[in-house]
Length: 473
Image (cartoon, rainbow, N blue to C red; front, side, top):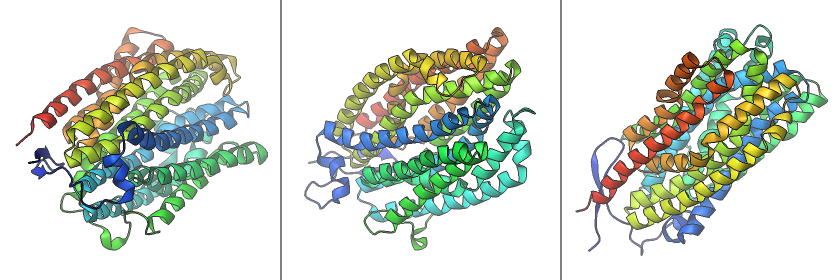
């Protein structure tokens, strides 16, 4: 007789889940979750996710790189200052993307395909509404927003121009960021990857044309960004309306009740809080660093871009395994869940070490690709090497974050999400500010927070995993 696993859903109500019947028909898009060898299942899910994240990385680097070719460090600083505000709206996409992916993958593991459709429709229409509201809000309050996020008299004109144009693409940004994750939940990882590639390639191709060719500078970067998000969103809409997916965005399938909104938000809010707090911490850091001058802010912005090479690669690995872990958890398959996790941790640690070495040794050439101002470049290289100190553990951190999210454990996910960029980083940053009158030492607050966050992630996961394995009937 098969064992039953007693789990907690996102509404904290106990449910009994049975491992799936191997003789029951299963959609081909989810077959790899259940039956493929673990290395094949992991690789087939993380490769598209990593490629998507690398495309996001290139997309993020492109604006700064081509703006850097104007040889105007104030423009580079302005784009760096505007980025945290932009991240706030990417966080909304992550809220529905990660929260929706977690719930949908568990619903499919439990065989509840109709609830998966309700969930995807809820994520689409709610995210779109928030995007329209956010777009209007920025148009009304762009100038005070720019001042609040650290723009100086020398950079506010560029920052405001960039933010006003980018605002037009916020609804499309939220849709593309949401469904680049959600589409992976029913096994369409390659489709999710292609949407990111097409949208980001549009942005990358248009950047040099609009920034350098047409001499639109910061405005050109913003317009290219908007077009890239529109292209990606339209690609996902085409897929979702094709009838070749288990998901739905049809208005008739919209449902917020019966635990759907609660299930998405329970995991989505903690996941998005990480991005929101990252944005908030970047704003605080920019304001503090601005005391050392605009060139320090420009160097910091470029160092963050260099650090993103490692971070985005490892986020891709972690988010790539979440649907697989969620399916195994929903199906009650403890053995496969453990196997996927162990293989992913080994892979993540190996990639972390390799990328740490690459980015530390290559910090000089990477920074000089964006900046030629000697003062800004000097700061950029120093900051980039300090940030990469946490590289060896970053892969482990993102795997454990996604492993926790895959279980639907809302409170541990919330604790972890508010820790790395909030509960830990901001106090450490303020303590370092009180102790050291040095910009590089302030940058060291980030790796300190990353190591503490990794330790916390391990502790929280072991607690959840012990409950998972102990709940037998």
